[in-house]
Image (cartoon, rainbow, N blue to C red; front, side):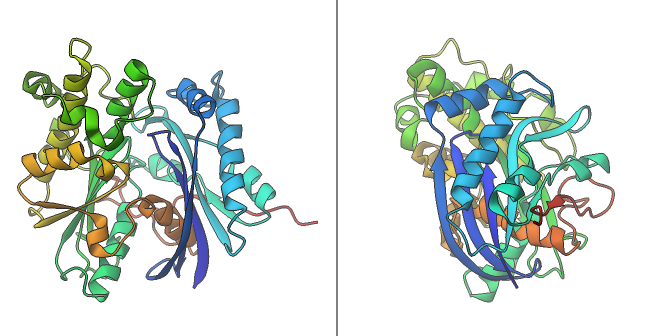
Length: 366
C-alpha cells in the first residue's frame, strides 16, 4: 500500500484541494487528512485570463507557474506523502481537435517537493481517441466498492454526480471485478454546473460564487432559456462525451434577466442537464450521490430534487468526503499510473481500449 497525496484545482477556479489516500491502486485501504488553499482575487483573475489558451498562449506561462507554486505550498504540509498526483489547471479541452491542456509542469513540482509526481493524466487518453474526461469514474467505482464493504451502500449499481465547473455523472457496478471490466463504469459530462453561476456572480456582483445558492433561491428560472439550452448539440451526442468549461457560453444567454432570475436559470439549467443525462444510463439509480462544490448550493440541490426521478443526497451519505473526492481520485489514479493500471476506458472516455495515462516525474538526485 502507498500513501499518496492527490491534488486538484478544478474549472471553478476557486482553489486547490489536497487529500491523502492509502491504496495499492486497486482497493482503497483508507483515507487520510486533507487541506484546501483558496486562490486570492489576483490569482483567480490570472487563471481566468488564461482560460481557453493553449501552450504558448500569452497568459499560459504565468498560469502554469502559479499552479505549481500553489500546489507546492499546499503539498509541503504533507510530508507523509510517498507519491503526489498533480492534475494541473485545465485551460482548454478540445479532444476532437487540438487535444487537452492542463497548465503546470509536474517535473517542476517534483523538484520543488523532492518526491515523485504523477501528472498529465489526460493527454494519453486523447491521443488514443478518447475524450480525456472525466477521469474520476474509475475512482468512483473503488469508492462504491469501499462503501459496499462497510455496509454503507447495497451491492447494486450506484450513481455519482460531481458538480464542479462542469457536471459529470458516473454509473458504476461495484460487483464488477475491476473498473475497466466491461459494464463496470459508464461516465460522461452532463453539462455546465457551477461555472456559469460563478461567472455570473463575478461579472455582476464581484463575488466568487452564489454562496449557498441564496441569490438563485430568490429568483425564478426562465424555462424558455432552459428549453433552448437543452437543444444544444451536446445532448444529442452518444456516450461517452466531455465538455470544455465554456462550451455553453452562447447557449445559456441570461443577460436580459435580473440577477436573481439569471442565477436561478443557470442553476436549474445545470439540474436539467443532469436529468437529461440520467435518461442515458442503463438503469435509473435509486440514489444519486452528489460530490463537488455544487452540493453546498442549497438551490442547486433543490433543483436536482425537483427535476430528477430519484433520491438526491450528498456523497457523505455513503461515508465519503464530497469536498475532497476529486483530490483523493488523483492520489488513487497516481498509484495506478505507477503500477501500470488503466485510468480510463471505453465506458468512461470512449477510448477504444483501457488506457493507462499520466507521466511520472522523479526529483533530481544529487
